[in-house]
Image (tube, rainbow over all chains, first blue to last red; front, top):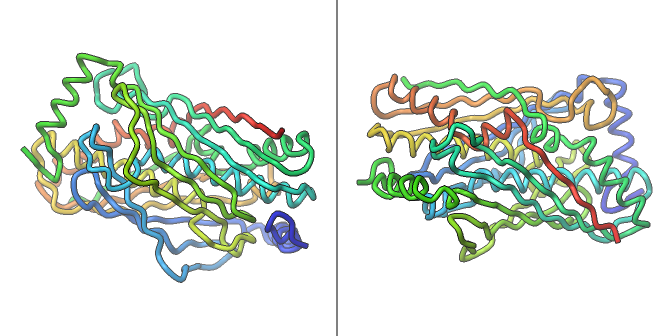
Length: 181
Length: 181
C-alpha cells in the first residue's frame, strides 16, 4: 500500500475521515522569531493545531535569516526571500509525491530549481514604480519515473492543489499587531 | 556608525551607489530541491546574482521539509507553509533593524509570532470553495527600545518596504516548467 514512500491506504483513509468531519481540516501553523542583531534573526517552528488537537514536535526547528554583506548584512543565514523559494519547491514536490501515489504513478526522481527575480530599487526606497517583492518566480522540474505524460499531469495536479503556490500567486491577508510598550 | 548592529554608513553608501547605478539593484535568488521519499524533500540554497555579479557562499544551506504524520508525512522537517511564516517574520524584522538604524532609533529587543490559518478541505480536494493556501496570516511584534511611537513607525515603514510582505499579500507570477523526459 506504499508507493513513492507514500502510504496510500492512510492517505485515502485521511481524506475519508475529513470528508465525514470537515472541521478536522482546520489547521493553524505558527512560528516565533527573535532579532539577534543587524539584519540577523532566528525563527523557531514547532507546535501547530490541526485535526482537532494541538501537536508538539519532539524538538524545535530553528532557522536563521540575514541579509548578505552586499546589502550590509552578515550572511548568517539565507535571505528571507530565499526561504520563499524553498517553501515553493517543497510544497510542489510533496504534492507530486502524494498525487503520483494516489494515481498509481511511480516516481524515481524529482528535482527542481526555483529562481526569483527582484529589483531592489523597491525596498531601498529608490523607486515607487518598482515593487518590493519578486517580480517573477520560475520553477523547473525534472522528473523520472512512469511515462512522461502521466508525470506532467501529476505536476499539474500538484500545482492546482498546492498551498504555497496559491499563497504566492494569489496573495493572502496579513495582519500586523505591534506591542511597543 | 553602527546602530542596532547595522552599519549605517555602509547602508547609506549602498543606497547612494544604487542611486547612481540602478542596474546594481537587480538580484536573482535561487534554490534547488530534491525529493527524498514520500512528502520529504530537501532544498539547497547558496548562489545568487546581484550588484552586477555572482555570489557563492562559503557553504550551502540545506533545509528539509515534510508533512506531519497526521497528514501521512513523516515529520522530517516543518511543512512548506511553515517556512512562509519564517520568511515573513525574518523579512519584517530585518527591515525593522535597518529602518530603525537609518532613523537613529535604538532597539533593545524585537520578538514576533506569526500564525497562519489554513483549511485543508482545499488541498485535499474536498471543496472547491475553500482556497488551497492560508486564509489569513497574523504577525504580532513586541518591541523594546526608544519611545513607543517611534518603534511603531519603524514597524510600519518596514511593512511598507518588505519584499516578503509584498509577495505574500499581493502575489507574484510563478512559471512552472517540466522536463519529464
